[in-house]
Image (tube, rainbow, N blue to C red; front, side, top):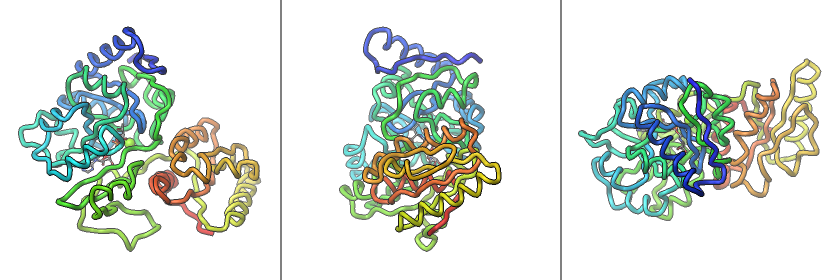
Amino acid sequence: MKTIYWNLNKGIIGEEDALVIEEAASELKKGNLIAFPTETVYGLGADATSNIAVNNIFQAKGRPSDNPLIVHISNKKQLHDLVESVSDKVEQVMDRFWPGPLTIIFRLKKDANLSNKVTAGLDTVAIRMPDHPIALELIEKANCPIAAPSANRSGKPSPTEAKHVKEDLDERIRGIIDGGATGVGIESTVIQMEEDHIYILRPGSITKSQLQEITPLVEFSYEKENLDKSSIHEQIPRSPGIKYKHYAPNGLLTVVKGENKQKVKQTIQSAIDEAKEQGEKTGILTFIESKKEYNADLVLTYGSRSRIDETAHDLYAALRMFDKNKVTIIFAEACSEEGMGLAVMNRLMKASGNQVVQV
Ligand code: TXA
Ligand code: MG
C-alpha cells in the first residue's frame, strides 16, 4: 500500500489544508488508517465503530489484541454516546483538563456504537479529547470517534515527529499527516475515577499535584518497576498495556541513578569505555549541562537538568537516533522524578527493561 504523506507542518492555514483534512477523514471513513499529530505523540487513527478498521490498527502495529485502545473525541456529545454516566467529579476533571493530555477510563454504555476490539472486550473504555487543531478537525470531519494508539510499531518509542511514523509504518497505512514535532513528547496521563478517588494508571504530563486540585485523593495505580515494589496496590485498576515491553531502542539501554553527579558520570564513562574496547558502538543520554563531559560514539541530550518538564519533548527522538546510528550499548542518566519527571522516568525505565544501576 502506498502511504500518502500530507504536509501540514504550519497547521491548517488555508483552504487547501482544510481539503487535506477532509481527504484524510474520508479515508478514515473507508476503514483506512491515518496517522495524525496530537499534543502528546502521533496517533494511528481508525474509525472506532468499525471492526475492520480497528483490526487494521493491531495488524499494522503488530500490537497484542488484548491491549485496548484510546478513543479520541472532539466534543462532549460523542462522550455521552459512548459512556454510561458521568459523575460531577469527572465533569470537573474534564472541564479542567480537556482538551488535553489526559485519558479517562469510563464504564462503556451497553448499546454504544463501538467496535469491541477497541476495548479488548473490557466493560470500560479509555477516552480523551486531544488538544491539537489538526487532531480535533480530523475527528470533527470524520464525524465518528477515532481509536488511536501511538503510531509506532509495537515495542518501539512513540513517534513525536511524522518521520518517526514513516520509519515504522510506511506502506502499512493509508496516510500520515505531518503536523510538525509534538509539544509534550510522551503519552497522555491515564486515570480512572471511583467516587472521589483518582487512580493514575499511566503517569504523563498531567501530574498528581495538578489532579489534586480537583480532589486530594489521588493515587498511583501502576507498577513502579523495581524501584518501589512496596507501593504496589493489588486491588485497584490497572492498564493492560502496562505489562508489555515498550519504548525500547535496539541497543542495550541501562539507566544510571544517583545523587552524586560525579559518581554517576564516572560510572557511565567507565562502562562506556569498556564497551568500546569490546567493539560495541556506544551511546550516552544525558543533559545539556553535561554533554561535553562525556565521550562516546554518540552523546545525546534530553533537555536541561533544571527544566525537567521539558525533558519529555526530546526523549523518544533521542532513543530513535541511537537506533538510526546503530548504537549497541546505551547508558542514560536518570532525571529527577519531580513533576513530569516521574512520567519521563517511567518511560525510560520501560525502555531499559528495568536495567538500572544505582550509584
Ligand atoms: O497520548 C496518548 O495517549 C497517545 C495519543 C495518540 O493519544 N495514545 C496512546 O495510546 O498512548 P496507546 O494505545 O499507546 O496507550 C493506551 C493505554 C494503554 O496503556 C492501554 O492499556 C490503556 O491506555 N487503556 C486503554 N483502554 C483501557 C481501559 N479500558 N482500561 C485501562 N487501560 C486502558
Ligand atoms: Mg503506545
